[in-house]
Amino acid sequence: MIPFELSPIDILQRFQPMPLTRLRRAIQLLCLFNILFLVFTTACYSGDRQLQAADMVTDQQPINVTSQKYQDFFAELLQTGKFSQTELNSLFAGVTIDIKVLKLMDKQWEGKPYYLYRPLFITPGVTRTGKKYLKRYHELFDHIEGVYGVNREVIVAIWGIESRFGANQGNFNLFRTLNTLFDAYPRRSAFFRKELIEFLLLCKTNAFDPREIKGSYAGAFGQAQFMPSSYNAYAVDFDGDGRSDLISSKADIFASIANYLKTFGWTLNAPVYARIGRSLLSSKLIAAHAKGRTARVDWRYVVTTQGIELPRPPEKGRLSIIGLELSPKQGGGMRYLAGYPNFQAITEYNHSHKYAMAVSEMAESFCK
Ligand SMILES: [Ca+2]
Image (cartoon, rainbow, N blue to C red; front, side, top):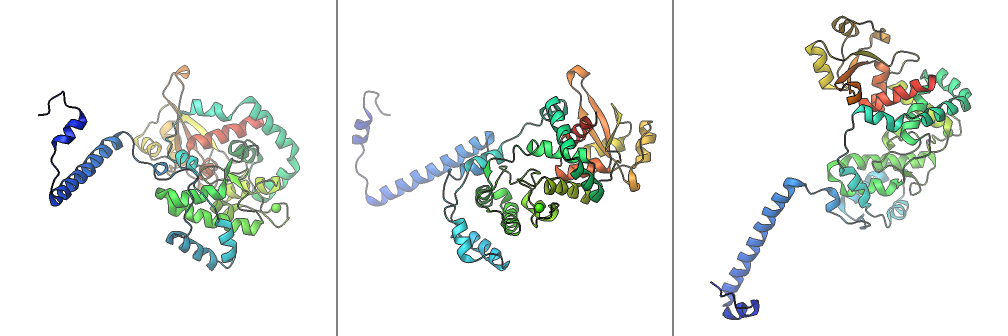
């Protein structure tokens, strides 16, 4: 027991110097104690918040491109025959971490109910702007509808939602973003490694300077907000200048969105969705709703089970079951919809049913 009147200095002076071995053992015990303390406090702390990618690095930390993973990455790029070592050295010199990208990737986005989500996208101003562009580019849309069989209103709605009709393509340097996610976002590093390769390839093919392009913190860019891999797979050169330019060519942008939807089964003038009531009347429909985006139900089954008339889907298409929350003003609860193959094609662009519904309703608003 230490008397209270002793100061910390006094306490220290009471201890006799220890022999070296005892001192070493004491230090070892102290270290062990510290480690246990650290493990314990980390365990307690992580109960509230897990360590995230942004906690492991600092902002503007240089990325170590001499690391084995970058050397393997460069070897793969060199194998394509499209890059030289000198070019890669110069391109990757000085690339640093963008901590904001990691923080945004780990942010828990609140899932808003549809009645709060919809007004973020569909406003009278947006509808007016969409109609203005449909008029301005009507000849181009005539041509695109003829080639791809995709309705112009849905193209403009996706363009509107993705980039506010081209006005907001993202403010993150895409080269730095993709490097940050490859180097310092372990959970999806392999995915972003591939996207970085795709990005460098598309810059080569379409004569973009990779260090100049801006995009979203998640790697999408251009007026249609394609990921680099989607860009290489679905972007088209519709104005015939030899490049697929989804940053500034309206012809390329609209045709690429059309090409994407066409690839995933869009049919011109076919139904997109239909209302099927405020409750689901069989366990099979309830299960399809719970399964979500990938569930499919036969058209006839929905008609007979819900006791309603529905338009027939094209080419033996099947339906998905969508539930959207009603606002307290509307009495709460849910309303249900059948998603037709055209609706399903929009969910290939973005997996959210709410996104696909906002696109569908925005497209409808252009026709009114
Ligand atoms: Ca072009």
